Length: 122
Image 1 (cartoon, helix red, strand yellow):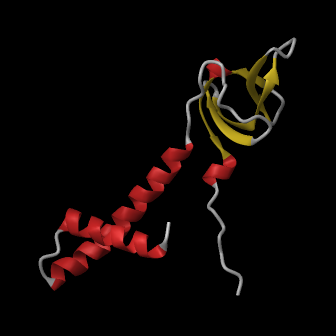
Image 2: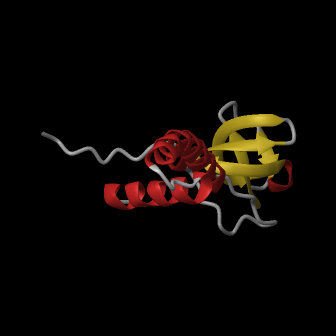
């Protein structure tokens, strides 16, 4: 997203949420909207990275690092073929424990949780 679009959206957010009829109201609105907008934006970004697996895991990307919320807590690992005869997709934790997809409540690819680094070299 371009910087100008973000600034425009932030100004609209401030005006809609806090008003801005005069200069004093506008200054107060910008302060509160900056804080609230940052918090709402961060919450949205984190929530959008979490997914619920389907019953058979057709959408899952194998051999990519994920964090999974299982019935036993959060675990780091990867989705891969698991089972006694390697018949189905499951979650394999970094400690080599295997979990069926029914044990995975939600997951996020670590790359989706990390910030994008698009800095310009000077």
